[in-house]
Length: 350
Ligand SMILES: [Fe+2]
Ligand SMILES: [Fe+2]
Image: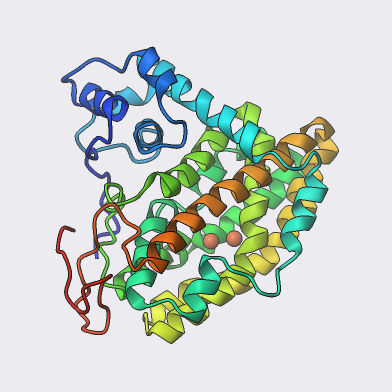
């Protein structure tokens, strides 16, 4: 299993903006014109992929890109131009709550007859849908907790201590085999999915890219530290019940022991993380910097908004019997896996 691959290669473009960013990183073309960026759909494939590529330079980068491009001032200007419409759209479309407490309280209310992705996978999901879900989520889970680590130098006191405690768990508590990103790679191996970091980028749609870009946006800007904390709180609060349903989905579909373990681990761990994040991280931050209350609420709301969009995309495709990916997943070795609309055989594009 290749989980130590240092860097993926640059993806295929999805429009003129992402094409220009990728060509520029290859050293074969200029950066995109500002007018192109302002005319693009903020949540569309082209802008989201271009932004994802810019952000990836701050994680592991790309094997075919010079490492120094991370701090290329012209590229950073383009990144800022891409971030503005993304952030503006989120502020306009996602903002519901003014205060962190209201936003977080609402997350604690679990609908009796929930209809999200985890409910679907638990109740009626097939193994091919579980595999697609894992492929879509891999862009986040293979860098799980990384963007949140950027906030640590920007926090102080209880917020910093609480955040560090949760991150310590996410990073395996000192054990490489327990790093959550590693546990997710093990889940993917159970599902016969390629575990190489970044492998699924070309197959992943704008909805899942936007959810990852949100974390990078919040993590890389000190001005958005309140939103990053809100995002982290939203993830931790919703993770435990969602993970319970996904663990049931893994068992019911026979995904495998590592797949079950990833979600079982999160049922218990995130029930604790939720308390620490809410009391220490959010509570500590707002004690130090009460004016960030609205930003924490915005981080929660933006997370919910993008997760809802992703869920709508996944469920829409699956209910139509179609793949949710831009390229189909190669059928698993195991005959019980199957793929959409093709029984036990399918396209081998990936
Ligand atoms: Fe985790
Ligand atoms: Fe967690």
